[in-house]
Image 1 (cartoon, helix red, strand yellow):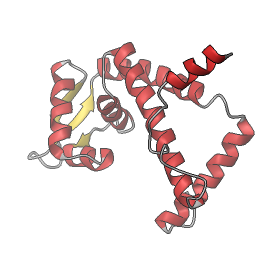
Image 2 (cartoon, one colour):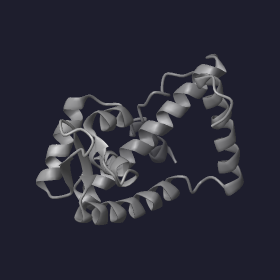
Image 3 (spheres, rainbow, N blue to C red):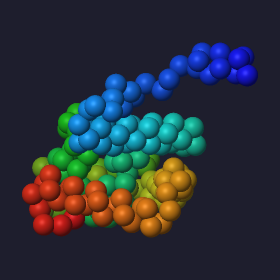
Length: 170
């Protein structure tokens, strides 16, 4: 029993945004840090799995996801807004995907000065494969919660989102 206590003490604690929180902290701060910690942990797992399974990154996956939702393609500025990153970041990611034949830049039919980025058929095929596994990873990560708990959490976070954004609903 003593050796087990020693072994448990020697394991370093997980350091995350929530580590410094104590019972005397305001519940809102504790909740914020819990949400932040969960998001970070989930994102880290997804990043690792995308790298291991598909040799890709989360930003590349996210860019392809935006293009999959817009078959007519998106302007670089639209991608930048949707991904909430700089134009330079979008350009770098797009260049890499284009070099691999997963996306293509096409001149916009209404304004020849603008390029639209679209998934190629190979890019769409690869994204569908990644998205299916990604969805299963997310399901696995949330499997500790029952369907009822998930619906309740979605509703609560919807209320919080509406309050924060000042909107009436989702």
